[in-house]
Image (cartoon, rainbow, N blue to C red; front, side, top):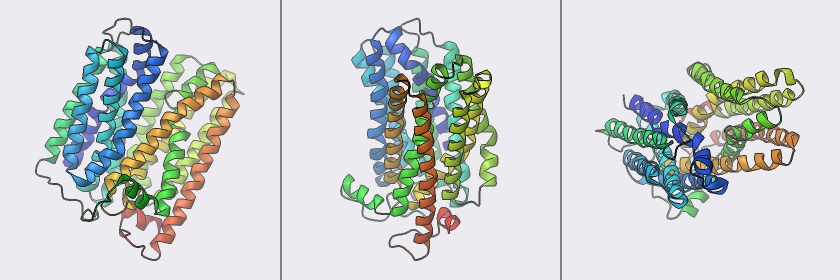
Length: 419
C-alpha cells in the first residue's frame, strides 16, 4: 500500500512540470515582456536549483527520515511556484523558478530511497517502472490541461499552471506523509545504513567513484541522458521544424506517441526483462537510441514521409525509456557504498540534470550554425558510447562479483543478474 501511495504521489507531484515548464519561456519573454534573456535565465536557474538540490537531498535522505525530506522539499517547491502568481518583476520570477527547481528535484532522491526501503528487492524494478510511468502521465496530464486553460495573451494567463503545480506538490506531500505513517525510518533488509557517514562531500565523491562499476554507471547515465532526454524538449523539435520542415502538429503528435508507447509497454517490458542483467538492458537502451538517430537521420532524404519518420523516432525512443529508469535507479542504488544510497542517487541525479541542461545549448549552437548533420552525428556517437559504457559496466560487475569486494553488498538483485 505504501508503494502505491508513493507512485500516486509521484504522479501528482509532476503535474507542475507539465503545467509550467512548456509555457514559461513564452510567458516570461513575450507575455510579460521581460525578453528572451530573462526567459532563458529562468530555465537555467530552474536547472541550477535542481543541480544544487539533488546531492544535498540525497545526503539528507541517508541521515534523516526520507519521508520528511520529500515532504519538506515539495512544500518548498509549492511555495516557490505558487509565489510566481505574485511575481511582477524578472528578479522575482527568477527567484521563484529557482525555488521551484530546488523543491521539485530535492524530492526525487528521497522518493527513490523510499522505494528502496518500502519495497522488496525482487519488486523494485516493477515499482520503479510504475513510478516512472506515473510521473510521465502526471507531466502529460499537466501539459494537456494547462494547454487548454493557459492564456499567454494575458499577464495572469499562466496563473493556472502555477497554482496547479503548487497544489500538486501539496497533495503529493500529504500522500507521502500518509504512506510514511508508522513506517519508521528503518531500511530494507538489503540496505545498510549503520555506518559512519563521510565527513565531507569530497569524501563522499571519493568513496562513490572508487568503485569501477559506479564510474561506468556514471558514464552510462550521462551518455543516455545526452542521447535523448537532453534533446526531448528543444533539440529534437528544433531539428524537426528547421531541418525537416515539419509542422507543429507533428511535434505534438510525436510527444503524445512517446507517452502512449511508454504507458502501453512499460509493464510488459518489465515482465519480459525481469531476469536480464541491468547492464545488458542498458546496452539495449543505448542500441535503441542508436536506431532512433539513424531513423531520424534518414528522414531528411524522404521529405514526403519526414513527419511520419519523426513521430516514429519518438516511438522508438519510448521503447528504450521503458527499460531506462526502472533499471538504472535500482542498479545505482545496489552499487552505492554502504549507508550512502541517497547520496549516490542524488549525485547521479545531479550529473543527469547538468548534462541534460547542456544538451539544448549544444543543439542550439549546431542547428543555429547550420550543422544539422553534425547534430545528428554527435548524438549517434554519444549513443554508441553509451552502449560501450554499459558493456564495460557489465564486465566490471562480473569481475566484482567473483571475489567478494571489500564493502560490497552481495545479494542484490542486480549483482545476481549480472553474474
